[in-house]
Length: 236
Ligand SMILES: *Cc1c(COP(=O)(O)O)cnc(C)c1O
Image (cartoon, rainbow, N blue to C red):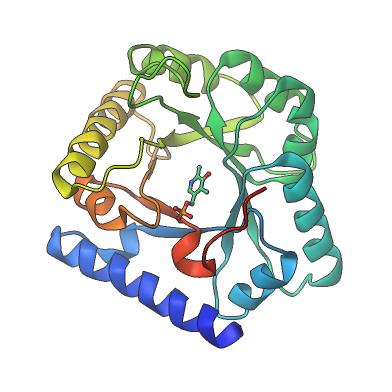
């Protein structure tokens, strides 16, 4: 299994590198986030031993258990944990206490709670706004038209640091369509960055296993990859 993980990691890194070069970008400007949801802590350790440092989880309970288990039993890995799933207000405390990043901020109330609940001995929680780039009414994420306003409120919260935006577009198989939707996110990202003028607003989190190339072409600085690293997830 670890051999497979090792070659998957090498493959994904190669896709990132080739995508960056063909887009005229520097590969080092694109971060790989390993999405370990639905997999056991062991697979995180397998990947960590090959140098992967940043991991993401979607479900609060599962994520917190994995974070705690690895911190306690494998302190030699200094991992950075991102929360990327939907977040209800009654679960914010656990996330504020155990994660380094939250990418799924879609309303001010959640951001305020995270800021209030962030323990004082920890660095500010690094956050991205999740933007509903397809504008589907049932999908999570802030409406693109309201993203700038939300960014302006979130960046004033004391224990959060606003780092960028995250998008999860509907799956598209067509490369042009993938680029089109990711380019729309890039426009929103640039608009917020130019308005709030923060150098640390540097994260455009978009692209998953099936659209890494198009996302990087459109300007992604962080791809979130699960299947291409770990294989198919079991249904929950
Ligand atoms: C599951 C998930 C991913 C990873 O998707 P893959 O297609 O398995 O690479 C990325 N981002 C989010 C928000 C996810 O929920």
